[in-house]
Length: 360
Image (cartoon, rainbow, N blue to C red; front, top):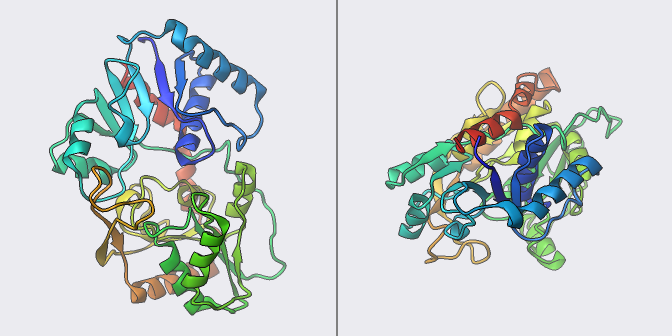
């Protein structure tokens, strides 16, 4: 195999979680790639592993000494920063959440040796606009960070629902929260755990968005989890639920949803974008999108930008309510989603196999 080089973020956010899972698999194979970190290295969210940390440090320290621009490099990052590279031939892993491509995005894509996307929806969207050298990269179950705790959170048999991911318009967080409260608010048989703190906003802005979504009302059966800094804490939150609400309008993967279903939690999901790659009628109850909304929200997506233009999927209130009824009936028949457990068989071994094939 040719010399291996990787440039990626190594930090606690979603890109960093994927990067670290890839790096752990390279470490387990005893490979010694040159590694360039995008931003500061931050493993604080991960369980301590001195051997892995030493391997990573050695790979980082050797990069500027041994890497050559004639060697291929694998870069995981935003489309907006893919034209810069440590190598003449770059294999990229990037992400698309909207249904539209700008000329800039197409040009960036076509200037890569190959571009992987973690959803078939993104691959097909790029192909539709004439981009080349595309391939779907399946991500897997991260057993280093997600596992069954076999812990009882409530003494009674209430059903615990979960909304995950930073609260924002794209994820339809506020719409989901609003409608769940109207359907199950102050119902002792149902509980909602929300891990939706958006750390790109301040505490007051987060609180204001929650108050607005709940129309100023309070509910004893809705819990807002504080922002957690470690994956161990987040794994605990995932373990606490019975049903995950996967109703985002645009996703590249959605690790919390994948992990929840893989751990045997039931799922009410949207039949769209990356969810189509792993959610189906056997492991979830799926509702169809009924419309689209513009992506620009004035915070994370801006109208007229040269990146991230287009729309997200949306869904109807009646479909949401009917879907809740159906998934709750499944839950009552069996608290565990046995079919969902099958998602654990897809791991980062397969992900890294595909990446390494790109170096040949």
